[in-house]
Image 1 (cartoon, one colour):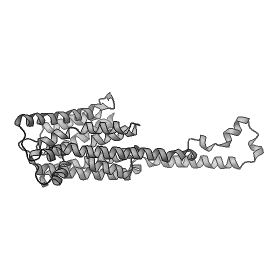
Image 2 (image 1 turned 90 degrees about the vertical axis):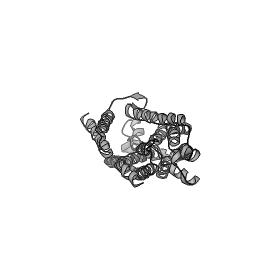
Image 3 (image 1 turned 120 degrees about the vertical axis):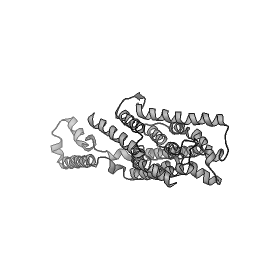
Image 4 (image 1 turned 45 degrees about the horizontal axis):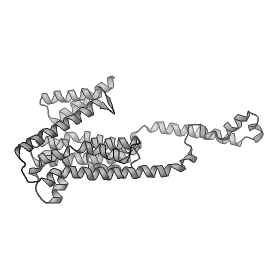
Length: 315
């Protein structure tokens, strides 16, 4: 297991940073901090979590968000089946360990082949789990601080200035306010709420809407969490300790990498419904070059990050 922790250590910073990004994204979709952390702890699948929260943030329904997330997580069923023969112990132990089967832990531990090492899978999985859940907690709790606080301070200063002008206008004698045009009376009557500052009188409808969005968020968190736990448990719990026919094992061994490759391509070349070519391609090519040079994992991660950052800086 220590070897798995060492192999997963280079991925820790990236997983923590992505977890923090998800925490911030979850807050913008009106999920509270606890819901975001619970989702990361139960689902532990970045692409599915981002998809579900993005659907909610765009005004989509619960079913659409759950379907999008579970569709991305279907790959964990064949992935888990390819390594199921190595899982031993009681039902609860296998259920807990199965939740650590993610793309990175599966690939670094041997991908279900003859060199597969369950202890490496668990070590990598634990390392990434701590990074992902911890990063989510930081992002969800400090999401406002991660943004640009200066713009909020500037807006508050503007609003205070406008409110001061409004109070002075309201304190003017009625005879002075009546010298202007008739339309001007209406304009001066409520200058605060035409200034672009928040109209708190309209916030009376806010709490019910916010409560509804939070209820929908918790429904998505629970449904996606339960569904993902079940998908990851298909192999280690349902097929644990049993050897499948060689033909079935070979087929599943091919299906899992194909699904993973499709996910990588989608994450690299897609933005919503559009096909895009941006800095992510440079990072992918740098990673491929590092793999071809047989560099260690930490160097591959650093090469991809530097290439992506450089291209974004230039463009």
